[in-house]
Image (cartoon, rainbow, N blue to C red; front, side, top):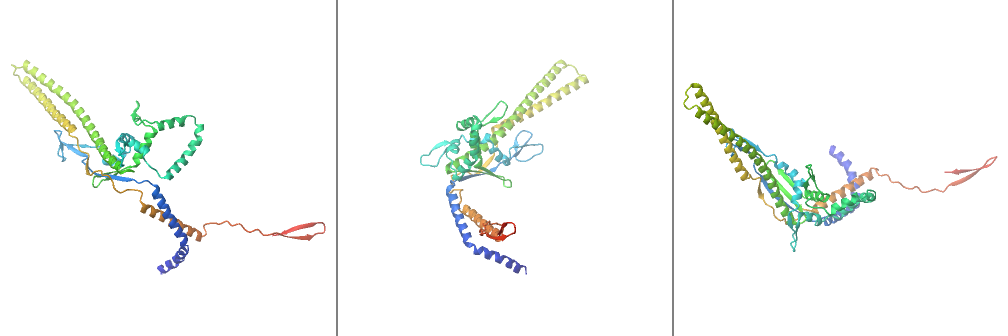
Amino acid sequence: MLKIRIRKKLSPWWAYVWGNRKLLCRLVGAGIVVAIIITLSMPNEYETTVFTVAEARTVSVDAAGGVTARNAMGSERIRDAVLPSHYARVIATPQFLLPLSHMTVRLDDEAGTTLTLYEYLSTRISRPWWSYIIRGIFRLPALLLSPFRGNDDASLLQNHTTADTDSLAASPEGVTRITRRDAAVASALRKRISVEINRDKQSVALSVRMQDPLVSALVADSLQAAIQAYVTDYRTDKELNLLRQNEALLEQSRQRYYQAQEEYARYMDANRDLAPLAARIDRANLRIRMQQAFTEYSRLTTLVQANRMRVANKRPVLKVIEPAHVPVHRASPSLLLNVAVCLLLALGSGIGWLYLKRNRFIIRWRRRPSRPRRYRFVLMPSHRRVVADA
């Protein structure tokens, strides 16, 4: 019974839609044309992905200062603060992107043009035609208000055109200052880099999308090396700070051991021939203190040597499974995807229009035809009155 009601209810609607199939066919054709125009207007982009596996982020250090694979009894665990889940945030910072933009890249052309990534992003990136229209619309209010702002916009424009790529410097207050052009280049590079983390498999996929395939592969390889160097420097600095602390403790333990040794030697020289019980107790206490100082001094000596070995032998960060290679096929634009999106929009808008039209949601204002007015005259005793009939 329910199926019959649904069929009776929907059959008039689909009959109405089928009766307006010419409108839907026109919209579908227009959608296909728009999808082709959009695809031809968008520049080709190539994507390179470097698949890596993260190494151990927590290591155990035994009493001798050596790195062990297992968490043994009495060992100390050293954890990293920069985890793979933080790589996306690290890569998005200007302090990481601007030094990367100074690398030299080579274009995939016959001349083998060589330039920096900063210059490539500034001068060699193509954009669709509608981006210039949108940019002009947003810049129009600023251009209209520029005569009333004085020379501020002129100075900003001069800084924008004559920007120094080495402007990434810290002020005496500790605040990093960059120019507007550097911020624009960093933003453009940030949009073309993506990091995908798989916590279950402990894998890190670094992807770079550029309009030149060779540039995409070179930047992906440099990005992987840069993130490895960043985390390695962090670990090295951490080990160096620990080494400085242990060396300071070693120097203090050395002084305590020498002092205890001197006290024991002076006491033995002064009380060599004495054999009372108090003298023997003091001598035993000084010997125990000297042995404790020597044990602490030996332990810190071994620990400092292990710290120096860990500083020299840098722990690996990422194991590269799939290195960067020059892509062959473009990643975007996709004609099938654009056609599918435009077809869905065309059909959805057409069916929505028919629904509104059928349910009288659209009010059409029609001008009523004017009718000629007819007049009649009524004779009154005192005067003549003209009455108009509607």
